[in-house]
Amino acid sequence: MPDSMVVVVEQRDGKLNRVSWETLTAGQALAAATGWTLDAAVVGKDVANLAREVAAKKVRKSYAVESPSFEPYTPDAFAVGLKQFIDSRLPKLVLMPHTYQVRDFVPKLATAMGGTVISDCVGYKKEGDKLLFTRQMFQGKLAADVSFAGPPPWFVTFQNGAFRGDKVETGASAAPVETVKAEIAEGVVREQPQAVFKEAKQAVDLTQAEIIVSIGRGIKEQKNIELAKQLAEALGGEIAASRPICDSGWLPMDRQIGSSGQTVSPKLYLALGISGAIQHIVGMKGSRTIIAVNKDSEAPILEIADYAVVGNLFDVVPPLIEEVKKAKAGS
Amino acid sequence: MLSANGWGLIYTYAFARPFVETVSCREPALKILVCMKQVPQKDAPLKLNESGTWIREDVSYEVNEPDAYALEEALRQKEKHGGEVVVITAGPARAQQVLREALAKGADRAIHLEDTAFVGLDACNTARAFAAAIPGESFDLIFTGLQSDDYGYAQTGVILAELLGWPHATIIMQIEKKESGIRVKRELEAGYFQFVDMPLPAVLTIQSGINKLRYATLNGIKQAKNKPLRKVAMAEVQSSLSGNLQKIERLYVPQKTKNTEFLEGSAAEIAKKLVDKLRNEVRVL
Image (cartoon, rainbow over all chains, first blue to last red; front, side):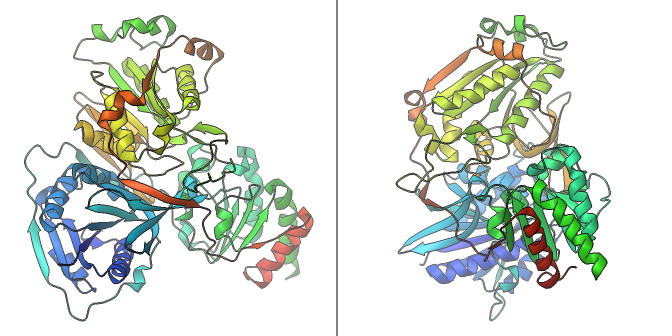
């Protein structure tokens, strides 16, 4: 029997997350490269419908792993339930999206199974018989190819945007769907989650902005934000920031771009003094054009920029504001 | 063990209790362990070692930012409820700086797993080493930063909880002590949050921005020198470790996926070039 792998997709409120398709695309590519079989699993209270939706894609089998204890999500229930499922099917490789929910339970699950997670990967390589998973290190300044050194099951999580969800292959015919009941004993779940909520109504919807001027630590002081605001105003765009700026209270939280803030894809993303930590980049890498100004020539943001200026933003921005104003007045 | 620290003499916080043992069980004080890590400074240029599997040691280091927030939160909880804050790190001699800073800010004592080899442990072995270094401590809470700026695994805290058999919650933005256990605020994606109630003891991974960081005072820095710092050698925890379950085969500068055009010249020239791009290439002017 060939080795097998399983993609555990993520659902919330009866809907599959977009990243689920990305991970499935990764699984299909890995299956083609290794010759291993590919299954999918949806975890939840009542998810047979979702398992059927996944079964339309090119997979051998689609599982609905069900228990009333999976709703609402807790790391205890997910780790115990998935351990039962993995123990019964023995996949060599278990793939998941690197979401906040997966981050919350997968290290626990892997540890309970004597395994390990290579987390937040952006790709894979197959060298001979060896599978390597590529992940960013040092906030994206370096990349590492990482291999498994212990026995399976091997867990891998893929970063949001690492694979194209719209490239997921459809199967020739629907794959069989199997419902597996997980037994979550009383007392296993120790967390009592309350309802999910949004802090306040978001005042700004940055996802609709065509031009975003975004600032990071390089802005140095709160009063310097005025300079970036003037540039945003001249360009007719919105001001935004990386997490540290909002943490400091220099801009409201609803101006934050990144995994914990908004995900944007404007026509122009102008990054001032942003080094480009992974958590920020996942929120803006879909922008059509990225211009980065940073004094550090090794800043990861420069890697994904279309146009880069290595220099002091306080030197570059004032003349830029004037040039933009001139250009606008002239047109 | 606690009374030997002498921190009761040092601290004048209104809520701090000098001796944990005397506190009644109705309003128990919190004994908190904070796991901290020393990482290369954010702007430090990194050089690869000869084998291309790690960076060279000769860079400037600083405390992992989310760990600083974890420490701050522990200090605030202690100020509110009384108790003790212990900090722990694993790494070579240089990592002691992180503990010294924590002691200067108000941590009561420190544990240093001191060996260069700790740098190369995977998340599971790091968690095992921490667990092996704290037998008989009976902490109520263990805090870690939500992830490190070097490896970025985001796993050590959760693994430690599993090894200890404790519940955990990740990416925490608020902690409130309840009659029994705690209520925490978890950050979810895209601006969503959730409150979770859980019993103690528990492990929490702390998000940056949960609080405002304090600075160490001159007095604090002076007093830190007299606070207990226990060193743990690799040999003392070795039997709890196994071979790493994952291996960095190679470390490298990532290949560029984009053809970045670097604009050079004086500030005025760069401004003109940028406007030209905005007008003719990006077409937003």
